[in-house]
Amino acid sequence: MALTVLYAGSEAERDDWRSALAQGADARGMELTLVFDPETVAAETVDVLLFAPDGPVPDLRRFPRLAAIQSLWAGVETIVTRPDLPPGVPIARMVDPGMTEAMVEYVLGAVMRVHLGHDRLLDQRRDRVWRPIAPPLARDRTVGVMGLGVLGAACAQALARLGFDVAGWSRRPRILDGVESHAGIAALPGFLARSEILVILTPLTEQTRGLMDAEMLAKLPAGAHVINVARGPILDDAALLDALARPDGLGGATLDVFDVEPLPDDHRFWDEPRIMITPHIASVSRPETAAPVVLDQLDRLQRGEPLRHLVDPDSGY
Ligand SMILES: NC(=O)c1ccc[n+]([C@@H]2O[C@H](COP(=O)([O-])OP(=O)(O)OC[C@H]3O[C@@H](n4cnc5c(N)ncnc54)[C@H](OP(=O)(O)O)[C@@H]3O)[C@@H](O)[C@H]2O)c1
Image (cartoon, rainbow, N blue to C red; front, side, top):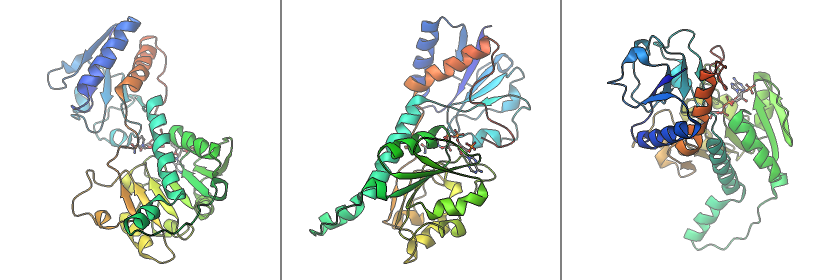
């Protein structure tokens, strides 16, 4: 079955996606009509929408034949909450090996920076201070990973392989080598209490929005560091700043995601030197590694097989 596939991702990445998808489809001998302009496409011909939140956001009701939506991002909160979402159309998340590798690299880098005290060493270097304080071994450092899905599990296991004392938290118990499993909301306070470094990697859903509020941040050990690579609204901005200001509160934060992106010029985070800010670059979809994933999914559709990595509309991820 020939499929018409409409790319509704970012304009900046459109050419890279165009060549990666076209070359991949040719190499596989797939019958696809790839369309890159949502304004001019004959809407009644579209079978599959490739969606990204930074794309042109076409009105989803325009596509009467839509058989599936493939998200180009791992996070699907912007698509699952859309009022124009046609009922019953399956949505697949992006699970891209390149994205997983990048997230592991970002999280390992951030955890190592905190673990080895690099920020303090940079301050000392600036002030010409020679103060030799050896960092603890990884085995004596507790790290908690909130969310043990594709990305969280890969990060937790990579941290465990480096020797960190790692625990993970998820909705359902997960068995992962070297990772202590905590599951469900009742287990969250205990999990936080043993996390000197916390990595947030849960999706943004009704359950996780605002989850890391003042009460939950207060469960972390004094001096803990929070790394948020999931979504900004999971972590309460004001509560984070308050926790950083308290003597027994947090030691620092590394934030890649924010309520509003780009982070506004006048946001208080810019004035807090203990917050490392990165502009949502922890892990992006790379056409060279993600296009084969999209083509695999289209191939499944053509063979009448269900898509992989389907979003559960009830849980929202
Ligand atoms: N900063 C970036 O550049 C970037 C890049 C990619 C992704 N992300 C973010 O990372 C998120 C995670 O991606 P992923 O691919 O790892 O997602 P995933 O495979 O769907 O995994 C989600 C994990 O979160 C857990 N979870 C969800 N709701 C929960 C709740 N209410 N309580 C406890 N645990 C809960 C799930 O528990 P179960 O295992 O029990 O289902 C699962 O372990 C994405 O949603 C996206 O927002 C950010």
